[in-house]
Amino acid sequence: MRCGIVLPFFDAPDVAACAVEAEAAGWDGIFLAESVWGVDAWIALTAAAMRTSELVLGTMLTPLPRFKPWDVASKVGTLDRLSGGRVRLAVGLGALHPGWTAFEPDQGRVERALLLDEGLAVYDGLMRGQPFSFSGQRYRVSPTDFYLPPPTVQQPRVPVWVVGAFPKRVSLRRAARWDGLLPNIVSPDAEARGPEGPEELAEVVAVVRELREAEGLPWEGYDVVAEGVSPIDVVAWAQAGATWWIESDWEATPNAIRDRIAQGPPS
View 1 (spheres, helix red, strand yellow):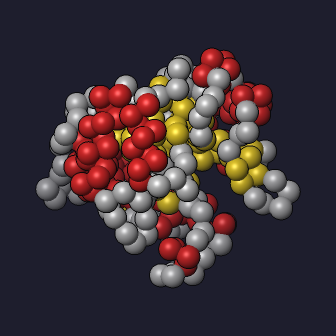
View 2 (tube, rainbow, N blue to C red):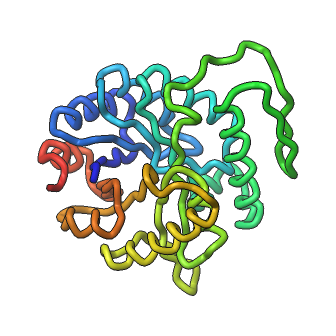
């Protein structure tokens, strides 16, 4: 199981410095929140890419319904080429908060889900190269030969991890069709949280694996991302199906995050 750490709300120079420390301490990846307004996650990750050689670089996560998919594909593809193929894109509907609603109203879950599905389709098509066209309810794309970017290092696309909300099969099926699962447990009052232990994760993984295999897609190479705060039983989480453990303490101070980086990943 690989281990990464979230750097919440760090500015780009601090992200770059923490990335160097994380790579030296044995972490496998660093991940940033992508804000509607704030520090640009992709610029900060680019700063990290320039100072590291092996660290995976990604978002946790990108609220794809908020962004144009061709803008996201441009940034992700550029960073993938620059980093030599070390990028992950994590996406979901996006958790509503004042940093989002200060700029635009909530469109509702149904609309955000539609934008997520169409956004993913456009992202995938552009990653695979031209000619590409798409005609959906919200996005229309025509083939173009105007200043095309080079292919990404990772093919057929930079991998996408997608939130799957258990027990909602529509959400879980969406996650199963892509490259990795960010598992959420949704309560009857619609509150979402991560699995509280390996047993709960294993229950989600079993459903997603069934859905993925029903689509004719291989399970091998598919990522399952568990998220939380250590200490953890690494073996138990791996046996439950996790391929990544990502430390995410959103309340920690910058100094506490750097101390945690220096301690190295859980073992």
